[in-house]
Image (cartoon, rainbow, N blue to C red; front, side, top):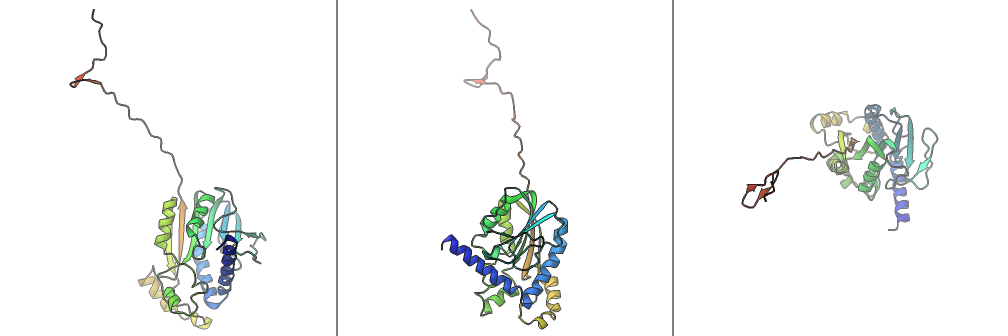
Length: 259
């Protein structure tokens, strides 16, 4: 598949994903995700925050204290506008930002809907300043929603058509790039039913899930920090060693001239 077709296909997937977030199950999930971000984002500081992908209107960074926020749409033609009126479109695999220019990068469900999640994380590593943070929202491959995904008839449509990566795997990818994971938390334990009236009656699922299966939530949030690369000077280990003559006899330090 040519790159132009790949971009159009990715754009189409994101439009359909945004449509799903307007359904009752999607809207409730957004509430849960924003509640998690309201706890995490206030502790992350800096001058520039980038949200990659816009699966819903309004963005995810309302709770952030970062001074400047940019939302980059991954759709080839999008009517999305960031709260400040700034509109940017681009590709997650090639972020249009200078190296070490951003303090926080937010990835809401980007890794599931890209052909190259490793390249996305490499780009995040490139644009983040040392000690910058990446915040990832992703669907968990080991949850009740995954079972629903394989039993349902709409597995080829977003969000079920995405490639779900476990938090353990994503942590391994980030570790190789030089990130330290600060937080991983699963949430959303109710089944993804379509009827909005029923969604409000699954408090028991949430209670039991958080109490007995905390890592099996449908979605997880992951926060990682880019390490500062420091050069450790290598001090030469000088040690005086006397040369040995054949036979193991120490060589004298000063030779006298014999006539």
